[in-house]
Image 1 (cartoon, rainbow, N blue to C red):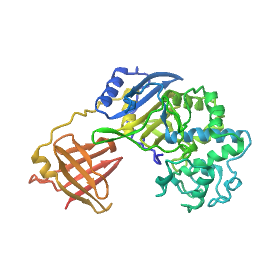
Image 2: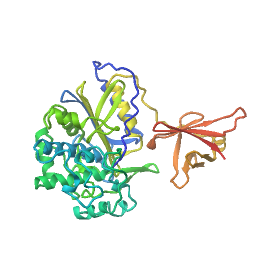
Image 3: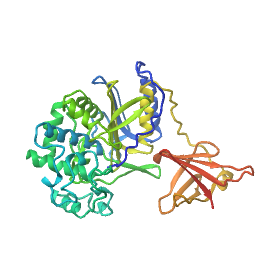
Length: 441
């Protein structure tokens, strides 16, 4: 489950919302991703409750060569939190609890339970440590876990900060909300999901993932050494209401449309959910696209990545769910929205450019940035330029121009600096808005 919203680079000018959707350009974009193995995904664009464009590329299952289609089910990771939040607010509207109800009413043994409120859990202000960040998480993430086992783990974690003093993303919050839903209703989270959300919103392809379930469910992959390699598989008894739902892009678009059109919650509850405090809503994020604002969530679990957003003023919903990325999902989102809102956008070229012996020799060496305490070694492996940060795995750098190189899978761009003598004394690394200079040692 990803802990940070990466969809933050939408810094564009005013858009023309009345322009006709350029489906040909979208087709070209996704054909380009597919041809160069940049992603395996399905996506959907919906306006006024109607799907206006959908596309699937790549394989749902590489081993069986099963192609993805509109009915392929993807693990949606932390988008699950939106569903959990909706169910909690439904229980609040039913007067079965309040936002000020203390965690100690359900789990008195947890740190600061007498201070932590339901509201603090919803908007990540509880101070409870994020259990998926722990070093021991990898030892049990693929195993079936019970409520008792997870609570025992949570009890041993120290609080990161005093409740409501600040915000910090924690999957622990939403696992606890899962258990609270089950305690208050007497039903499983999966059962409540169907009765409270799926039936009301007309979602036929959304459910809590079962570990034995195989039909139409995509496997996830990491791109390594030029091919897709199956990723690990988290047992769904671990993430629960923090990340255990599977769905399709069209179902997710219908879900967020139902949420914003009053089919699931009152307007008062919706306004509360989408009110931001320290950049966190109550199960929802806000992200801009030019002068416009979308609400939604992103998700990531194992090799799956996804994003769901809704523009209330335009009544437009978009969703991308993928089971393998050799490119940054945020860049895919920017491309799709730029085309949808009729903004200038050039489809990237992924054609590999040749690296000369002279170029590679001038680039090779160890580069350091003392401010962040990091060294990166640049080497050549055959005809491929490689980069490796100390203590990490090596990754390929593809040539963009004479001095520019990139690693699409992580959104890394490296620009080598050439001095007046033709030497390479440094390079600039750009990633996720971070710009660092590394000097050659």
